[in-house]
Image (cartoon, rainbow, N blue to C red):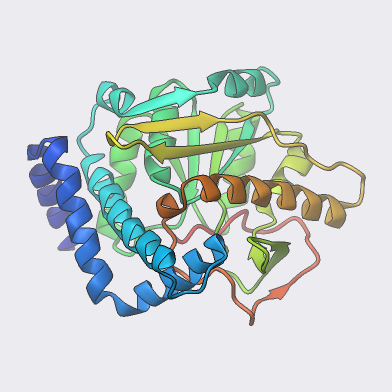
Length: 305
């Protein structure tokens, strides 16, 4: 239970630093971590090399990985700071673009499945949606420490954000949220299981969760692609895009496959735009993983963040 007090201490320390000092310091810590975290560094080289279409040891691959470590620790600083941020402060930190797509989706009264990737700060993205007035449910794994997890959940609830823990009841809670005409946010560019939907991702097959497509097919909820990027001044821009077309041919397996491919194409586009803000230091392309014929899953998504 030592993590919650450390989390609160970190909140006080980070909150005392002005942004002009906070983010350069976080980036410096990230660059230092890049030097000492050999395994994560190796995985980063592999991931960014695949994204860039370059060898793992190419100078641009290495620079991108190093910048990503710096951006990751900037994200960690904001994650810790979230415990005390007020809604008006979050609004100042996040500028939304394309809110009309969410408004139009919710006007259908079927809720909306929001898909995003681990770009920049997906946690801040969900928090911003909540403080801008959208009922938001983020589906995530629980943090390792129960005490820390309760602290994080409470800090999110304070600003109106709900969290759906991944588990046996997650699909039922997702369905309830959509029936209330709320947003369900899924960071679904990583899949921790061994069986999923195989989709070409930067010219190499990778596995993705069938959940977002399956849920949209079962409920009629639209799939809204949303992502957030960090600007050079460390202000976030949250971009809401038009709904993705959901394949509805009547062949469930084929419809999940095609719809998941469209989601992954969105991921590719935003990652190409900001490769060093794609903060993934886990293996993405795993040759031992086996694809499966998609079916409505028991668990909607795996988010190892």
